[in-house]
Length: 414
Image 1: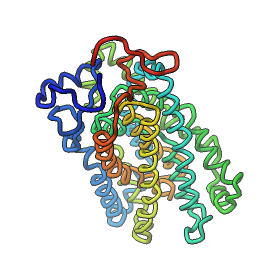
Image 2: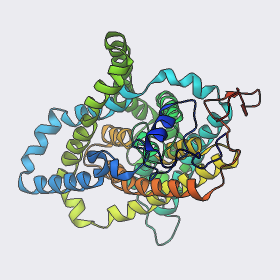
Image 3: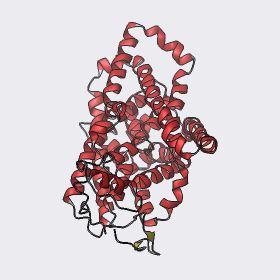
Image 4: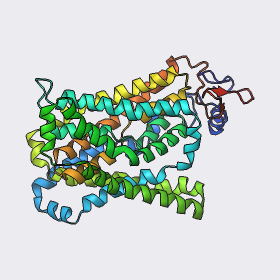
C-alpha cells in the first residue's frame, strides 16, 4: 500500500515507474527526479506555456509601440470587433478540451468535492475581495481608491481556472483525473454563477460594507447586473457551447483518443495567439496610460501574488488536513489557486472597453500568475518529499468510497 514514498524495487527502474504511473489502479508517488518520463519536471513544460509571461510582456511592448507609431490602426480593429472575436477564440480551446464525462467520478468523492467548492467558490472570491478592498478601495490611507483596478481584481478572483491549472497539476505530479473533473465542474458552475458573483462582490457588497468611495466610483461606470450577464452569455456561453459541440461531434466521428491526443493539442495554440492579439490591441490603446503610470503593473501585481500564494498554501493544507493523498491534494490546491484570466479579460473588455483600466488590470493577471504558479510547482514537489503521507488516502479514485466518503480497500495490495 502506498505510503507517500517510492515503492521499493522501482526506484532504479524508470520503465517500471512509468508503468506504475500509467496504471490508474496504482498510486503514483514519485517526484520530478525519479526518472519517469511522465513525472512533473518544469523543464518538460511546453515551450509556449513555459515562457507565457515573456510573450505577454512582448505583446505589451508591441502594443505600446504600435499605438505610438501607427495610432490609426486601432480604430479599424475596434470597428470590425476583431477584439471580441479574438476573445471568443481565446476561450474556445480550454472549453473544448474539458471532458465532462469525468464529472460523475468527482461527484462520487463528496468530501473532496465539498472541499474544492469551499476553496474555489467561497475562500477564493472572499480573499480576492479583501485584497481589492485593502489595495484599491481607499480604506487604507496611503492606498488611493482605484475603482477600475478594484473591479479588475474582482473579475479575476471570481473566475476559476479551466486551462492552465492542468499544466501546473501535471508538472507537480497531481491527480489528472481530479484536476480534469474539477475543471469540468468549475466550467459548468462558472456558466451558472459568474455573473452572480461579480454582481454580489463588485456591485452590491461595497455599498453594504460602507465603502462609499468605492461604491461611488463603481457607479460612475454605469454598469448593471445585466451588463455582466450579457457579457458572460456571449464570451463564456458561445465558446462553452462550441466546446461541448466539438467534443460531441469529434469523439463520435473519430473517437475519444483522437480527440484528446490529436485534435485538442492542435487547437491549444489558438488560446495563446488570441490572447496575445488581444493584449497587443489593448495596449495599443493604452500607451499613454502605461507611459504615465509604469508602476501600476507592479501595484496590481502585489495583491495578485499574495492571492495565488495564500490560496495554494491554504488549499494544500486543507487537503492534507482531511487525509487526502499527495496527488489529490495537489490537484485541489492548484485548482483553487489558479484563475480563468481569459474570462476575466473578455468580460472586462466587453463591459468597459479595450482601453479601460479594468481591462488593463485583468491583463496583468496572466503576467503574474504564470511565474508564481510555476514557483508553486516546486513548492508542491518539496511538500511531497517533506510531509508524511502515510495513511492519506481520502479521495483515492482507485478505491471505492464508503458511506462517509472515506476510502474502502477494494482488495489487492499496492
